[in-house]
Image (tube, rainbow, N blue to C red; front, side):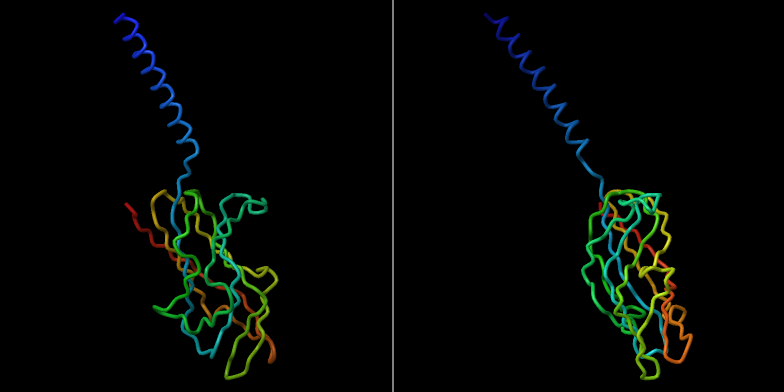
Length: 189
């Protein structure tokens, strides 16, 4: 009678061990490694009175083929709308993305997507700003960075205002975005 009880306990233990190990494998395959991302926007010092930019989105390119439908990952941009970049210089910035979880993948580019409601004030005269057609209402910066899980990546996009705004004629202003992106890495654990 003792032998069958030991055999049942051993059999039950083996079955439980198999089930537990198979469950942990399923959980591991469903686990996605994530990083956190912050994105800030800042302008440079300028003689312009105002530079109003309409910000629609911030995106990361996660596929090598940028024409692929899933190449760009749209981030949860919290401060969309029109912002006067002359108010955001030096230590003042606009937080565009705040602690968003993204897959820990290779990031090729970061893109700032702009709307059409952009204007500039120079010598107290307001101009509607056209975006150069080659930029297709966005400014793309190369990152080429492998994100690592459990890290916080803070990207600060700096727009060089004077280099980005040109006045080709007396009544015309054109935006050719000249930006660079600085990255800071923080360990979460």
